[in-house]
Length: 413
Image (cartoon, rainbow, N blue to C red):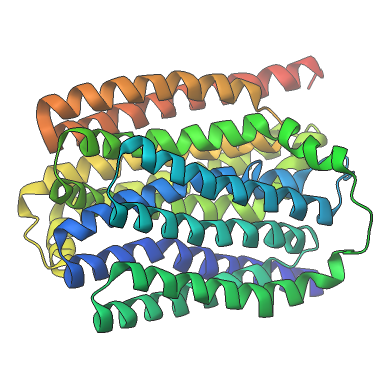
């Protein structure tokens, strides 16, 4: 009974924390659009998307790898040391990226601060991994919930008072650092032996063993944002804002996937290790069916009331983008189902094949997004988004089902 109550608390707080954190980017973009204008919103949108991609360098192998590590040879302290290295690389990378793109000084500052904010989130993730391994997902949810609520309020208040995006981003960073120090680290310290000797081979081992997981996550985020970089190459900041607005509801689909997959990672791994194909397939089917059902409802809402609601939220006339929004929702539903299959493959340590898959999709995304966006402007960006997501869904759904059947067939099951 006590374990069931803890699982319920973990599930509820994980939903609340992950949910509010996922919606932060929505609130930030709304605030910047209304307070600072459509041009600043375009810069913020691309900067935030870039920070999210670079964030993958910070999390590297990710919490899924940390929680489901089979041999348990790497200590929590070694994971933390590895994370300090990766978040340092994050901030170096964004500066090099901005210099390569030849951005002006104010744009570089926005990109750097947003990446620094995500680097604090990346460090929090390694602490969350420690807590989740010790069945403390409830604490993770509470932390994310507090950070999300307070940072949104701080961002909006500071931006209203200063009309300055840079100062507003600094307020977010401050909130995350304070909660990290006084809540996350305090709650996790009993599970971390800070005095233990560091095995640097283990620290480096995370880079080696987690490379393919890192690569597919990095490339996965790139393919989602490939149309944004095509817009940055050929179109204006105001177009970037419009695309950012109509693609924002797609993040809800990713949020649904996180709600459903994270609490069941250990169970999926358990079914796989037990070679219980029937239960494993049944669990995957239920998760995917839920996402598909949600996608159908979301598509209907997007078509009939989506642009009106978004127009009210952002204070812009978006009536011309009804079909664009519908296409985005359909595409994101397909992509989300694909990410569920990806999470299953990652849990069973099937990563190199995913690396190859994402290289193929990324090359496709780079070519298609630039060619189609240059030719058809915003409509081209939306079409390229659909094509990219459809390819990802098709490859993952086919490969995962074939892989599972082959594995269990080899074990005569």
